[in-house]
Length: 199
Image (tube, rainbow, N blue to C red; front, side):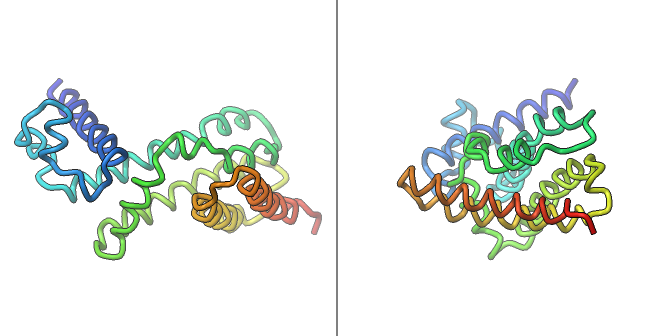
């Protein structure tokens, strides 16, 4: 029972931290501000997270859990099928839903810390590896891709996704955004088509 209460309280603190980071920025969010926002004494927050760095590490795990949600419909849709529908797969991976799952500003603020903190760098590396691993598991369900190197294929697709989202976040014009997005999606389709070609 104590463990459950502890887990609920920690989640509440992490979610409060995330909401404040979205509103005020990571650099402007302190344990005192989180306490005020949640209506709890800062000492209680520090009982669970003695410093801001530990909160950031917990936030990175929170990012991963939210980003993994992008796969849920894919895992459900392809669980009984013999072939992965590339349109559904690419459409989901390049969906704007990533932005709804987690705020880009918070993601990149945390990401910037990898250049100063080896532990945060390692946590971000794990996050990216997990996302690739889940994509590989989906690709492995396709009987037509059984001879393909799905680990390399998921890596290549994610290189496109990550570059696309980084670049697209700077584009304000809706038409230009859509054109660039379709261009990136076509690159992912090309990779899948190449793997499906007979040897």
